[in-house]
Length: 128
Image (cartoon, rainbow, N blue to C red; front, side, top):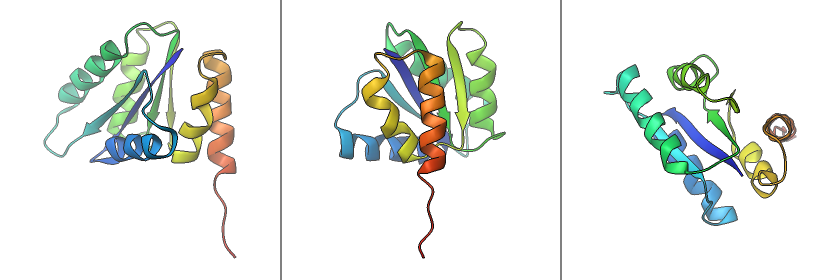
């Protein structure tokens, strides 16, 4: 199963995780990591490493960061280099996370990543 780490500024990641679980139920191998105002890059790195460790055995790791280029994205990208099967998606939203949950046990990391990006784009609509 692909492990999921949600990461973002303030309560973004924990709120996203809460929303996912409200809709889809408690999810195995998924963690939320907050980057708080008082955290340094090193603090965030420690939190992310602990979250990854807490996932247990996974076939890959997909980091969903709130903002491309922000500290959560950048630190996730730096530590993702340590695993053979890990990637980071910036601009995370609820649609993309929900879309990959049912299939992350059966698809490759690349397939899950592409599915998430597609769902994220398709989940943006305007009215009227």
